[in-house]
Image (cartoon, rainbow, N blue to C red; front, side, top):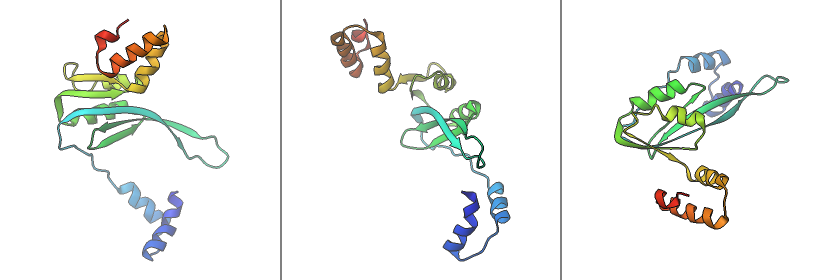
Length: 161
């Protein structure tokens, strides 16, 4: 990856730049903290794992990340630091009500519970995981399909068993 940068720069620009110069420039670059100009009324939060390259012969290293996407605007992600993610989202201009979409994983809801305050958060389980959990409840297919239909239309009371 980064060992190809001097070669790539030479191909693109015709200039020879040494590895140490590339490294020094990359390390001195400060990524500005991104800020939305819009009032945040909806966001999605998810997480996953990425494989970090390791030296030949050594086992792969997997790192956990979490990412927030403010709908139709900006996103922000962190490796293994929920606190940084929570601080970042709470620096944004949060609306009176913020719809927070997540997959139901504890790691996601542990971050979500720190977005704004309880009165302004509307926590929503994504459709895929809602259905997955609905079918874990069990019962007849007819009853589950009826509950699913009510949930699709937002009629939570009618979906109750």
